[in-house]
Length: 172
Image (cartoon, rainbow, N blue to C red; front, side):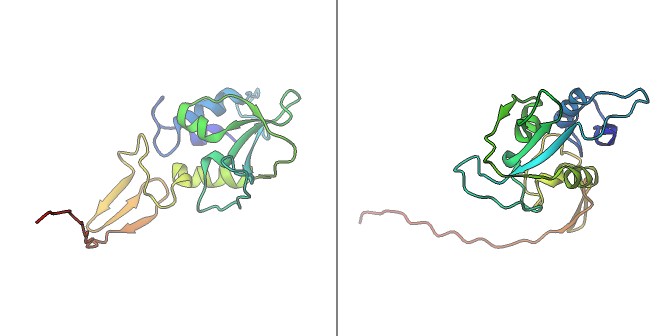
């Protein structure tokens, strides 16, 4: 994969793609003579063991928890040393850590990069409810609809009436 496919348009600023992820991967990859990048220098894995309580978590493409996604750099010195994808996305850097061999992992590298190239950061926010840094131009609004400029998904605006009942103590 040529990581220039996921490079944000402005250096240092996220848009459809995360600047922090691009910058991290750019430092991790080693360039070939032709200017492309070596394939299979890293893998993205889904950790089935919850990092919160150890319970089993199924991989769900429509409801990703970034804390369960790990970057595994390949090579002789790495073995089972990982980086947390959520730390990379948030801070642009991460500390390596190791996991016991008893932890269950699924390699999602091919799916992740195919989907990330197509949908950008929407891969982590399928409901389009989150606020992302650099998301000022994320939507194009047309009447009562909006189109996500990252993944091309359309949303229809609905206005719902929400009625709140409050209880107040009154001494009479």
